[in-house]
Length: 297
Ligand code: GDP
Ligand code: MG
Image (cartoon, rainbow, N blue to C red):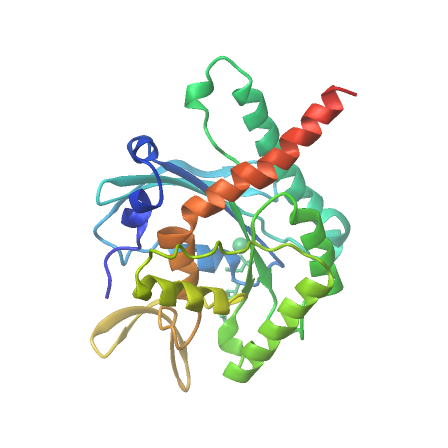
């Protein structure tokens, strides 16, 4: 198996300056309770499988409110430091508080923008902590035919504020055909409703063919069908993160079984810096423009 998850490629994505300071990245997970958000996050980042890196908890499980849960960790890999913050939003979309559950999320995103805006106009501009949400993983349930009305409404509240990456939860409950069909329907719904999900940038023409191929496959996999698991299984003498069924094992990291690796590659090895750039240049700019027009009124 591989021992690294890919942070070490970050210097290729950005300038020296940020390498020295370390990277700050905030990922938010949104979706119904029980869709496997916490499990996926755990599978993505909190693995004990990766021994060649150190994790030190900066703030362990800060409970901001009853609904937003923030975990920050410093991850270091081959000398590259990332301060990764996960915003978990349990219970989102629960029938009981469905009406304004999106408010908790949008308020959180706006609050981080506002804080950054305040800090930026302050005296100590050089050492601002960037807590802006750079990416929102939106979990779509596997048992529907497409996005639900509720999903569309929530996405409309979010898409001008944050980079949305759609994932189909618990993809191991679907057949290959069902996954393809659901992906098509979701993309159609996105188009018909003018929802702006995160768009992968054009691949640089001077990239090598292997990278271009990887990039094409990444784009073709959206929305990512994912499987998560907190269980380490031993299969044929190899330790894997998987789900054991009576008929066999789903290997989370097997690309035939799910898009998990593609999602992780995208978040960490290839598009982390672009997600930060789009946050800064598009979403934060929108917010700033609103603030400034409100002040001048
Ligand atoms: P959350 O409420 O969205 O954070 O969901 P959890 O991560 O707590 O998971 C809820 C339940 O779904 C747990 O029993 C998990 O074991 C199970 N689960 C998580 N991920 C998957 C998956 O990819 N496939 C399947 N079949 N079950 C999953
Ligand atoms: Mg959870």
